[in-house]
Length: 112
Length: 124
Image (cartoon, rainbow over all chains, first blue to last red; front, side, top):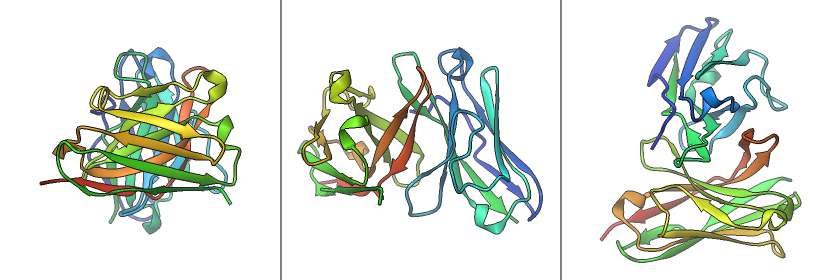
């Protein structure tokens, strides 16, 4: 059961900027816990894309960036490329009984 | 090479049990907590449970949806984590991923490595 809400889909033309929101509550993002992002291509395992709100693991292009404010976080992709078409999930820590790990509902990014 | 490989999935009848294995290599297994995350067909990611390192007591924790039916164990001598699933339900049908956890400051916990997953189908 996801407690972090994401838009089901976002789309953009190559080269454009798209953002994915991740809305939580006072028991997770709003409590100050960090947000992390994963990228998943069809039929493959998720891959860590962003950790601790705005840190990219080695090998992740700098066109991906993250931010967090209040009870929400965002992932931005600038200079959208065809290879960015995938599903994206946010994840945070939750201090309530649902925790400790909670995922977002997932967002499908489509490159037009 | 850092690697996580899940095995043990398959078709199982409702009410039966199944054990999944996560065989790891390329890192010091005993130093990391390990999680299981599942993904039902066409659905999103759902955290199932994790097991702490022996240094922190080795106890597992579970999502409410599987608590009292699933358990997790680890064998640090062979770098393998297990997911023991009992009283399986049709809604447990999913790809089950094993993942390595990173615990930084309290609450800054995430998954930096994932296996390819193993499919569990619960059906009569």
